[in-house]
Length: 212
Image 1 (cartoon, one colour):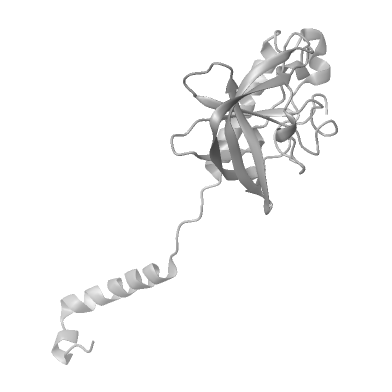
Image 2 (cartoon, rainbow, N blue to C red; image 1 turned 90 degrees about the vertical axis):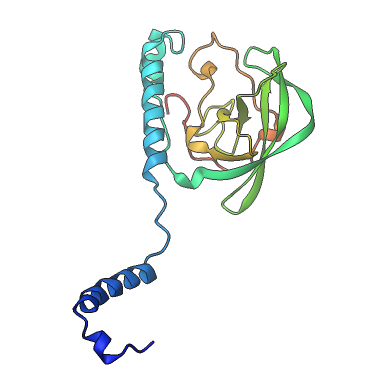
């Protein structure tokens, strides 16, 4: 639009035009803000610090005579590539699963459904469980093994605890994968991941094998 010459001579317009030009330039050049990666990394650091303190102080978790060999807990470096969205596909009925444990007994769990996700372009799935008889689901128990199990990570697999959502949409963050308590003390009873939760990829995130 071409403005009349007398309008262009207006002192007010002369002052406004440069500001308007700057705003238009900023609007054209700016895109969506970059995702804030500091928040999940800060939360992970706090979670690890709290876990380290707990294991260093509680003799029920790590016997005093084993602390030097097993602590501090070894971790993979944080990697947000192992933080992925997932969808929970609910089972038609809760299947009762008998999981073998570290003491040779069986522990009854209920499979709520499968968490489906993609990692490095590969579609994967993990069963999500709750304790047998659970009425109100607060969190999902996800035991798993992968190609690092028994080598870089604990031989009996690792665990994830994932807070339940109402939407069925989740985030799986393998940086929070942790060793069962029986990795540090024989006093604990720990279920092993079922065959359906044995991944055919290497998950180099979370806790490594104790003493690694």
